[in-house]
Every structure is written in structure tokens, then in C-alpha cells.
Length: 194
Image (cartoon, rainbow, N blue to C red; front, side, top):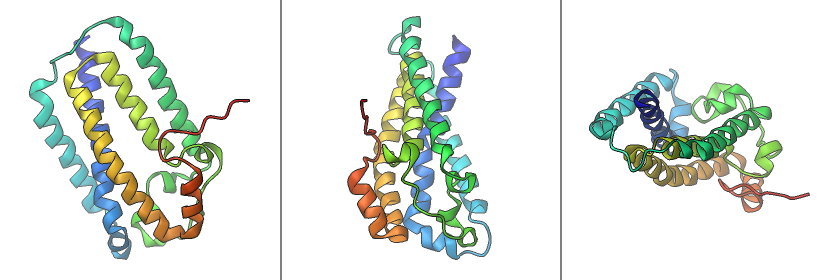
């Protein structure tokens, strides 16, 4: 159980920094695209530094649990499965280049159309919803205080990051994105029965 909790803590450390990574990108997307050299030469080391910092900050509390029961792994398994489903669906109509965010930071990746089909017809940011499902699964399953705190941090920074990403997408796609944003929710998907 100790190993699984450590894996859960490390997973939450990584996931919790995803919004912070994109907060480095979206407010300065036009500057990153203007660079001749790859912006990932700066962004990736900065992100790794975040992992180390968050890990060092939360490490002393990584064994503190709110509860410990095997039953919580049942709903956690459903959340893991939902997250994997969302990841798979997210890649169905998106290229690896788009999933990796290259159009946001590289001018040499041309124009990619706004994708509004598949899972994106129900939720604008299915990858982030997948991340949330995975973090909630680890938090619920392990019962670790630190996982719940990191999940809360990711939700707060993710809300800001989504607003910034939407603003950047509006600059790139204009009225097409604005119409899409009015119809499709950011994170909580449209569920159609029947």
C-alpha cells in the first residue's frame, strides 16, 4: 500500500503542475511563436523544476492520510477508466502536434482547424477533464491529504489557465471559437441521452 500511495502522490505532483505549465504558455503565446529556437528549451526545464519544487514542498506530508480503506478504490477505478476513455477520445480528432500544444508555441506548425467534433462536441477541454479524473482517482483511492490538496490546487490554477487558453483560442479562431464556446462547456460535458 505504501508503494501505491507514493505513486499516487507522484502522479498528483505531476498532474498538479500541468495548469502551471500552460500558464507559462498562454499569456505569452505570441512571444513563444516569435522565437526562432524551440520554446520547449525553456518551458520543459521550467516544468521539471516545478515538479521538483512541488514534490519537495509536499514530500514531508506524503504519508498523511485522511482515511485508509480498500473500498475507495472501486470509485477510483471508475474515475481512472473515465480518464483513460477521455484521453483516447481526445486523440481521435486531434493530431499529436495539437495535443502537444505545438501550435501555441511554434509558428512553423501552420494553421490547424478548430476541432469541434467527437468528444469536443460535448466538452471543450477533454484532456483537462481526463487529468481531473485521474487526480480525483488517486486522491479518492489513496486518501492522502496531499493528493486532495494538489487536486484542489490544480482545479484553482486550471480554472485560470482555461480562461487564458480560451482567450488565446479566441485570438486564433475569432468568431468561430466564440460560437463554439457559447455552445459547448469547458469541463463538465454535455450528456445526451438517447
